[in-house]
Length: 351
Image 1 (cartoon, rainbow, N blue to C red):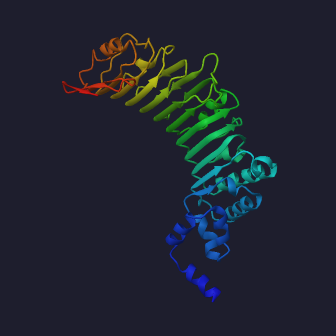
Image 2 (image 1 turned 135 degrees about the horizontal axis):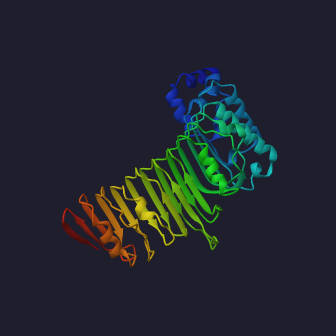
Image 3 (image 1 turned 135 degrees about the vertical axis):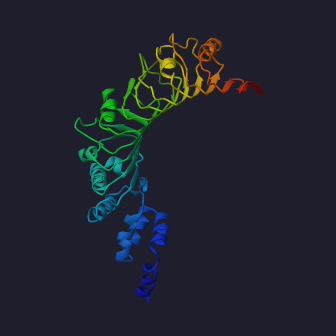
């Protein structure tokens, strides 16, 4: 009777079995793999493997690595790893060895997406990872990334998200970006944990850039700190940064849409670098927003300008001097919540 029941389970369609397996924890998935030979290999057909804090034990990681290692290549699409400091993996060097072995195996199985959250723990990825030719998305969250090897190549990586990541030195940022020759989307979230002073983004292939600088706690960087951006293929820019004291934008001739909320007293290139945009949303509490003489917004169609700056009127008069293409103008105040809205010559007051 028991064998008959197992046969009934085995007769279920693969799609239904995969839905069942996707709702289980990794330990439960491991337990179900002993039901039949078919279940033993079926769990590996899922699109995402997620290993949480409770799954970080030697036996489980060894089972996963061994199961993947004996499988056909090109099966693992996504691997999501999360570690909370103080658990077994954090204390046991052997567990870190298991982690490295798991990443190595995932790379050999055609890994396309990797997300690692280590909650402010140092991370050294195995050298084979930096030669992964299938990885398309990499998300690093709240960790200290040990230095990147100089001879790496993430040849297929198109999306990179660095969320509160600490680097060994400023140069490590550019070293990581330099081994991503086809990178298209970059997301950077800086916090009090981030230690890079000048975050240099020099990526010729980049088309989308999002920067969010949030300061947590009382830690305040000393000296010059901010961003240097050189992205000749960039089309979409979204930056929210009220803490940097240095912003340098260069070579962004393809920019179409920009949302900028920044303090830019020491920037000499902000407005001029946005001249090609069609959609611009600009907010700065700076009393001196630099504007290069001769800058023309010849393609500007939609402008949103925050009135929190005392130089707002002067800036507005300069921006709208030339563009005959401007169709929408929106003046808003973050403090009061009121805004004036203009469209095709008509004015609306919104409270």
